[in-house]
Structure formats: structure tokens, C-alpha cells
Image (tube, rainbow, N blue to C red; front, side, top):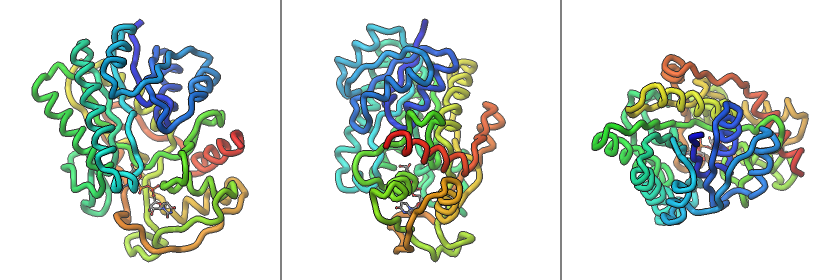
Length: 336
Ligand code: UD1
């Protein structure tokens, strides 16, 4: 049976997507160097799905080893989640980010080309929109100015993929712009488990609720653009996001070739304050917080127009903010 190759398949979004791929009857091969994940994720994926998955502990920049994966498996499509994602670190170590994310994607695409595999889904980010309008992002908007090397890698790879399709329109490509993925699989077996002190809101809340960090800083409560002065984001449950990939893969199978761009978000912005309050209420835990200065580079509001994915691939995010908070905390409780 033809297989889906998932790079970064033991990571946060990757592992949830592998689960949904297996649930939908696909055979999956994971390539991951465990740079930001743990090896037992593979066993946990098997436990959740009751299905087997092949795992290669290799770096996708290692061309020789990557080619071996294509030799040993009949790969039909590739979903690329491999990549570094810490915004602050990317500012300090831009070369590390450009090398891993951009060079890695190029090695992967060249290898695909060599083995005549041309179906590709790329994990992009809403960050490619930059600051435009009132923060509502629609796919017809041009990519904007990115504010950090991490975001720029996403923008560059999107452009590379457009050029690749222009040069050879046998490619069948999807660019998926994720908004703010949070939550975890309801089993509590997989979830977001960043190494070190987290940068993103939900992992930070989880560590504070678990008393590993004494309080949360809410960065800015004086934004005039939002109802309570804190920033607003389009938080999306990671399982909804993962299911989006299955729908996109179906679309690519149907279309045979093309380049397609989709926002994967709920379309509903919630503020940081609403997120924190909901987490406290739903889980009945304490999350001490203080209002701190604005964080440099933050946009007041960023959310999706989610109508294109609904109309074209029949995908809508179903889970609520409560589900996101409950499942995130369940993951902490099950792994303490
Ligand atoms: C960031 C990146 C985005 C990336 C995403 C996931 C930018 C501008 N944004 O999104 O590209 O895809 O991370 O890695 O590059 N907050 C606090 N206290 C905290 C942490 C966060 O108040 O301790 C607030 C932030 O100010 C922000 C909101 O929570 O308003 C969400 O922050 P975060 O989770 O870091 O995501 P983004 O910055 O939206």
C-alpha cells in the first residue's frame, strides 16, 4: 500500500496528524530526529490507534538517509512538519532556522523529485500574513512582512513551492496556514511538550497551573483593538487542525495537480484573558497571572477567515475553547 511520509511526525502537530491519518486508513512513515520530541510518542500513537507506524530516527537534512526511506517505502505523498518554531530563538540564531527549515525543505523536495513523488503538504503559519488590515486574514491577501526569521522561513518556503509548481505543474501542493494550535488528544497520551521554558501562551499556562512556574505574564492589557485590552488570537484545537490535513490530502488526491492555500483556524478570535479565565474555570485550577508590558512584535488581533476551507474541502473546526483548555490540562495530569 502507498504511504504518507510525515516529517516531524513525533512533534506536536505532527503526532496528532499521524493519529488522524492512521484512523482514516492510511499507512504512515515518520521521519523525525527527535529534536523537540520524545521517542515514546511513536508507541503512544500506536496505543491510541491500535495501528502500526514505521519510524525513522533521522534528520531530514541527511539526504542519503532520506533517500533510503524513499527506497524502502512506496511513498505517495509527504506532509512536512519538520522545522524549528521558537520565534525568540530564531531571532538569536537565524542561520540555524534558515538551515533547518529552508535547507531541510529543499533537501526533502529534491528527494521527492528524484523519486517522482509530487504530492506535498506544507505546515505554514498565519505569521506569513504579517500586519494587515484589522487582523482578519484571508487567503487572497498577499504575504506580508514577517517580523522574525522563523516567520520568514515559512514565507520563503511558500514562495519556493510556488516557484516549483510554476516550473513543473505536475506538483500537487497545499500551503496550510495554521493559526494558534492548542489542546491535546483527548486520550492525554500526546500533546504539546516543549523542552525548556515555553514561549507560547498555552504551554506557559500549563506550567503555571502545574506549579512549575509561579505566574504567567499577560503581555499587554492596553490594546485598544480588543474588548478587554489583551491580544486576541484564533486558537484552534490541535485535533481539529490534524483532521484538516486529512481533508486537504483528499483534495490533493482529487485534483491531481495544483497549488492550494488554506487557512486552518476557527474564524473566531478569543483574547488572552478569555483563554486564561476559561482554563481556570474549566479545570478548576489556579493560574496566577500579572499584567506585564506588551511583547515586542505581537499583533493586537490575528484570526482567520475560515470560509475557504469550509467551502472547498468541507472542513470546519468543531472544538470549543473549553475543549482546548480541558484537553491541554488532561495531558498535563496524565503525564505528571
Ligand atoms: C507565535 C508566532 C507564530 C507561531 C506561533 C506558534 C509571531 C508573531 N507569532 O504566535 O508565528 O506560529 O507562535 O509557535 O511570530 N502571551 C502572553 N504571555 C505568555 C505567552 C504569550 O500574554 O507568556 C500572549 C502573547 O502576547 C500573544 C498570545 O499570548 O498575544 C499568543 O502568544 P503565542 O502563544 O506566543 O502565539 P503568537 O505570538 O500568536
